[in-house]
Image 1 (tube, rainbow, N blue to C red):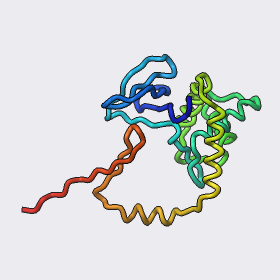
Image 2 (cartoon, rainbow, N blue to C red):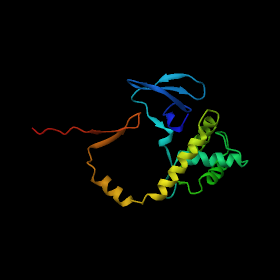
Image 3 (cartoon, rainbow, N blue to C red):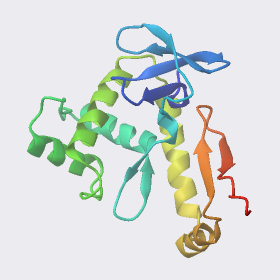
Image 4 (tube, helix red, strand yellow):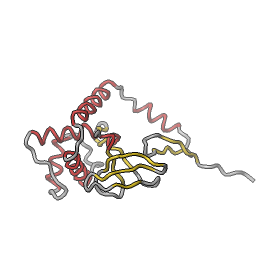
Length: 183
């Protein structure tokens, strides 16, 4: 199993493995209890390989953060749980990702991350492939120029009545608001 095969569903605890697709959504299996269920188009689904963590300079992919947690655990550090003290959670997160954005990355997010790590550790996740993903992410970040000004101009030039939606499969679709017709 790879990180792209695991999703989080808003409003549902835990992580879920993608088993397949049907005409209205995905067929998922819970990693905690093994129950299978289908999703509907209104549910917000996040693929773990697409998730990034906020830092002060940029966003870091979840694969990189998970590998950092694994390295700390392999070195003998105990990973906090959802019941851990907030100060302990923040101290561990500072070791995992020293420059994480302390204003936008809440303690509840950190606890969720550590719970996710525990769930993924108990599954058949291919950690060697995860390591390759994190290495590839670091390589592309180092090679890519910082075009924040260009991105800002593109966002400012986008029409205001257009919204970009991300479907469960990750494809982007554009929807436009209908214009009012004059009389």
